[in-house]
Length: 114
Length: 116
Image 1 (cartoon, rainbow over the protein chains, first blue to last red):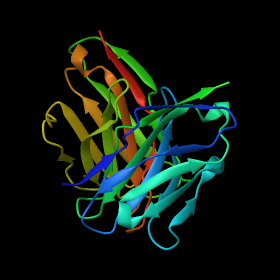
Image 2: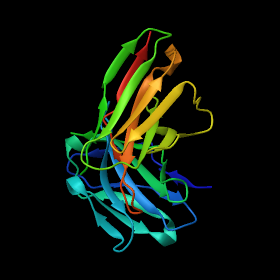
Image 3: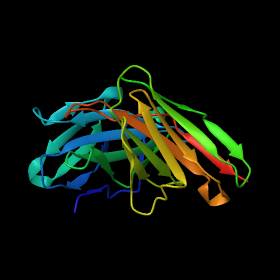
Image 4: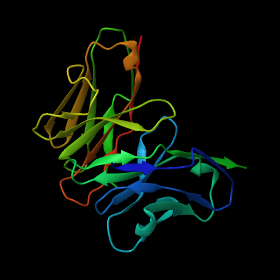
């Protein structure tokens, strides 16, 4: 069955430190992968997406993610976090054979230490 | 990126009344729209998928007679919570995507519903 796993429920990093949020997926076909960010009480904003081509994708706000097919992973990275990055981050895979539904990870809450 | 709006952003209603939430794609044609429900500190739960001009497809466990979805145009979908009860209180989020294979789902800002 298709699934997305975000193994870290919470991550705490110091402002200015680097960040990596993990995402693993299980999907039989070529995955279309997404990272979204949600601030408290808000909708979701797309950070970046992978459809094909270069496996290292750049997104907004200085984020990047790398698709590794051999590891079924799509980890999100940022070299230096800012206090404004504190939010909930969701990884998702799109099911092209099921009306383009997104399968969601449980989310990772990012906490920034001053 | 594309913009999706939701209205209202929050609503308080009495138990037994119906509430309508609108979701609009402002600058693109949304052939498919999705309605989600999100409980506190949890991920999104897909309620239903709607294609323009077709009946919505509901996820297992979602009552189609309680959560009425209409997707009458390429820019508007509505979710009506009928005979709302306190357990229907939640954060409802819509999203929309265009018709092509490599598309992005764009999300509305969400509607917080409180049923008293």
